[in-house]
Length: 176
Ligand code: SF4
Ligand code: SF4
Image (cartoon, rainbow, N blue to C red; front, top):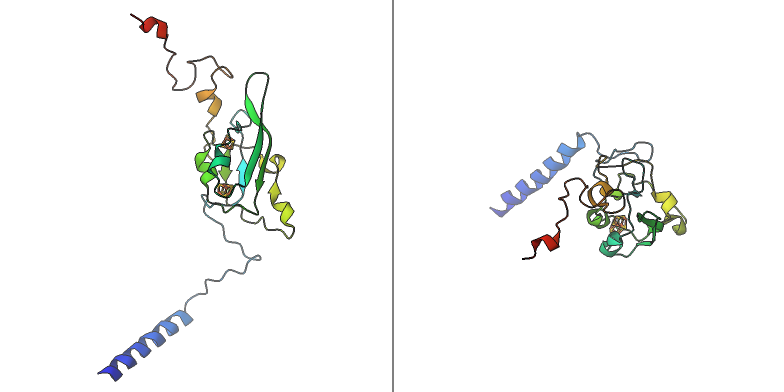
């Protein structure tokens, strides 16, 4: 009968309401109480250094190209030894959607997401971070990785001396 099914639906709804009345609240009284995000939470972006203390970023612009909202810009520069870096590096966090694509695209693991989500501010211009705001002293994730030990040909080691790098092939020796 329809009346019985209606009463059953009503009682089921009331049972669910009553059940939740005796559960512990899940509301967190932020900012007095803070929830610790997971380590892979995607919030504030940083630029990291390699284990030797050098800047990991080689200003290749891949992060900028991957960014769907075009909020990364930089100017490349080169040392006398050929090592590249960013003369200036800027991220506009007012546009950033924290998708993590920049970190995925980075070949040197320089740009990384951190769980620091407390970067709100009243002045929107304060959300434009320059290199000095982004560059940290540590390695962040993948603390042992040094891009130049793998691919620093002619910069930190001669060709063929990189980690997991095969010796160069003398193409003339392959000729008949
Ligand atoms: S997290 Fe996404 S939106 Fe933010 S800078 Fe990186 S690529 Fe751009
Ligand atoms: S942060 Fe990474 S992807 Fe972006 S310019 Fe630097 S090295 Fe290239």
